[in-house]
Image 1 (cartoon, rainbow, N blue to C red):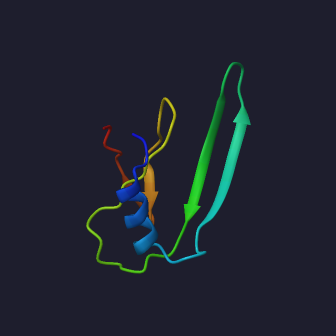
Image 2 (tube, rainbow, N blue to C red):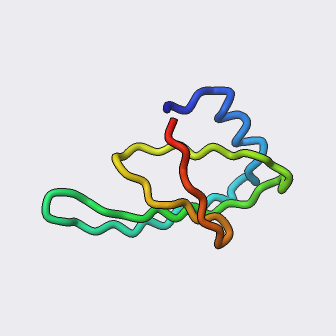
Length: 75
């Protein structure tokens, strides 16, 4: 899934400006990399029912949101 203009504008409206931080934990394995991406941000509106996360890769580990594990839907 590529990020379209409508989705980008929606994200910009619900995420507090300059609140996003990223922490990456990456290790080199025999023929590939394994890693964890931690993304922290503050929402302007806590009443959201859905916030889509897009990524590139083969396998995703469960997503943890405020200590709750969420199973990613593959689209």
